[in-house]
Length: 369
Length: 189
Image 1 (cartoon, each protein chain N blue to C red):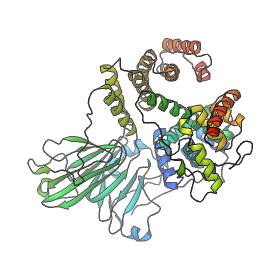
Image 2: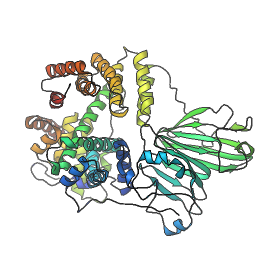
Image 3: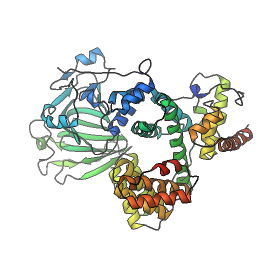
Image 4: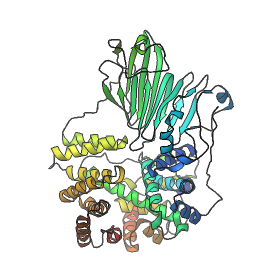
């Protein structure tokens, strides 16, 4: 047995942990996106994986991709959006991994063709003409990420999923599998029903060929021919998961947390708000108000909304520790919202109620001017 | 034909942390990335040791870096970026553990289960594996501060004053938390 009393021998290097380059890259993608710039000035739109073999590289046709060597920001990209449209990647016998500048990873399987139909600061849309693509998407607030295939649109809520667009009897079969997070799928049928597919679930649909017109590379989700599509159950036997999970407080709380975990912050905020409106006396209400305040403050940049939620959290007292946190956050949020009287009041209240509190220094230093 | 321009920024020899912090404060994105790449493994390792087998570690580490890189102006000693980041991670973990405890009390979270046998990396010396198993078999039952203090002491090998600095607690508080944790650890022998 090792005597850990006085020596400085460390066990830390012997703890199992994944510190791979890929993980670090993925993490940086998320950090850079949240910092609002990160590496975008240094890389072009596509950054093929450096692990790609020479043989695989030879099997690829990159038709129109233009990777810029000069610095640019998203506004520049938006202004020159047409320069990116039509960028196309086609694989032969080998799969290719592609890393986007925000850290998202795309794995384009063999014999697949994917093109970029839209890229702006707030949206990115890929069209899968054939084959399969697996996406591990870094969530970025305010940015939509859509994969279109055979008239079906898959809108990313969070994070790891695959889309297949393959030949099937009488047409093409689009299949969506979600490994982590959730996506919203807009079907190709006449009603274009939207379903939410959660982790561990899959969804599929067969679309008759004539519904898509003659050009398979140009999926036209906006104009599907009526009465030519039929939905069929997934080959993987799991039914699609729908967003509505009931309206009782517990279900709403779980739904909000799921949305948060999936990176859909606006949905999480809406659900917490619904819980507070419908169940203000539920034991979870205080915690819901606190979480709503954190969301609005840290993720949605809605300081006025954060102040309201945090006021409610303090009033509902969601446990002693969280109440202290809520009051400290109320000082910061009201300062950021330029709500001077509320900031000063909250600061005085915090320092009076928690003279030795863990946020004492931060709260004392807050400027409510 | 696509023209790719990849500018990898590796950790290792290069500008000092103080120089990188100064550049990052000035808004240089490359300096932010360099700081991240230099210290992300330290932060990930630390978070993993405090929250083993936890699927929220990546989120937590990202949150810590975003917070640190946005608050560089409040860092008194830029050369001490690593220690400062470490304390941000330690405090974030403590906060998360306290919140989870509350959720568990409300019946909204399944109590944490740690597979102590899977903590040690393959091929570590037997006595090290035994010690790691012993520590991690009890941490789930400890209060947040006692747990963090015990892991920083026993696994990371930090001295008590350094633990106090990282956790933002007084020396006497850390000693009390460690005493509680050590008593439970001794009973587990």
